[in-house]
Image (cartoon, rainbow, N blue to C red):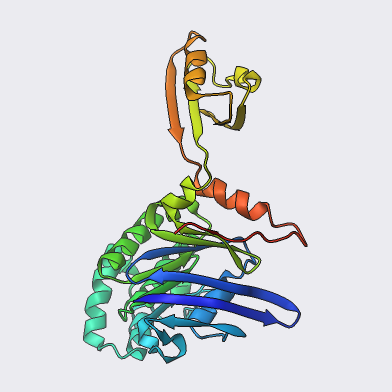
Length: 314
């Protein structure tokens, strides 16, 4: 079973929001659907959900067109959110789950468990408008999952959450994954993507520019980074004079660099030892997903710039 998006395009008047976009999401995986603002993510999500119809191409789940898949199979958390502000948390969530045919007592039992897990049991009888933005976000997540959908599609689910609540939501993602749910989500928090996702697709200007597993995407750059820290020389300014070294970041606690011939990791380590201080960090690492995202998107984001073919590394 898989969600298969094949060569879909969508125009709005003179604007082409999505152009010949294809991707595959395997059943039961957590999939990151990434891109800058205005890249076409939300339009694509709405076509997957059959809220919009593509002008060309097709979208299927297990070989069946998505327009024929029962609504109960989908759980959707929209970026704009969709709660009724005057309803209480309990009444709203029971109402929404009942629309999908869930028995009331089953919903109430599941709801009690999730409210306790999300630490919002005391808000059960409060109106949604009385809740903070972060707690409203948690209620919106519960509205997405309570009817036990097979496929969860979430547009910026971590927006507005503090680090504690981000961790609560991550745990909920993993719980849904253990239950066999297929999860597709968009976010600008690349560290979260690296932590949760098996596969990703990065789009820009309505087209896929990078796709594959997180590990393969990071390794596909063909380069490694070196992170170095010296207790007596936090700036490590002498690195700028080493042939083949390009310093990419200077943090409070380390300096990050790219190496190209003739520079080698052994050379950098020997040079650092000769400085007389203590080496507190020496690390060889792959580029972060955030760096890859910026590189692939900013490189083609200028108006009328040619769009490169997608890097397919499945």
